[in-house]
Length: 191
Image (tube, rainbow, N blue to C red):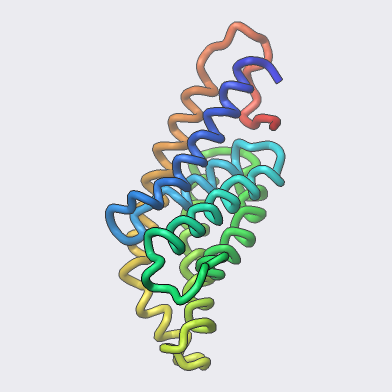
C-alpha cells in the first residue's frame, strides 16, 4: 500500500470512528452521521470484514458506555447489548452496501443512502414491535410501530443524505487530486 492509500485508509478509519462516536453528542433524535459512515466505510474499506467490524464494534462500545453510564438509571442491571434492531440492520445493510457501492458514483451513493435509511427504518421498527410490550404482535402492531417511527424517519433520511454527500464528495476530491505516483486511480484501500 503506497503512502497516499495508507493515508486515505487512516482518514476513512478516523471518519468512521468519529461518526460512530458522534452518538455521544446527539443534538436531535436521528440527526446523525451513523448511517452515512456505514456507507462510507463499506465503499472505501477494501477488507469487508473490517468494514463490518469497525462500525459495529464501535457502536457496541458506545452502547456499553451509554447504557451503563449515561442512561444507567433506566436499567435494572448491566446492559451488554443495546437495541438489537440496530445491530440486525447494520448486519443486513453493510453487506448490501458492499454490492451497491462497488463503484462510487452519484447515483450509487444516492440510492444506497436512501436504501440504507429505508432498511434501517423497517428493520429497527420491526424489532421494536417484536421486543417492546407496547405493541401487539400483529400486523396492526407492526403498522403502529412504523407510524410511531415516521417523525424520526424524515430526520434519518435527511441526515443520511446530507452526511453522505459531504463524506463522499470530500473523499472523491481527495482521491482525484493529482498524485506523484502513477497508481492513484484506485478508489478503494486495502487494510
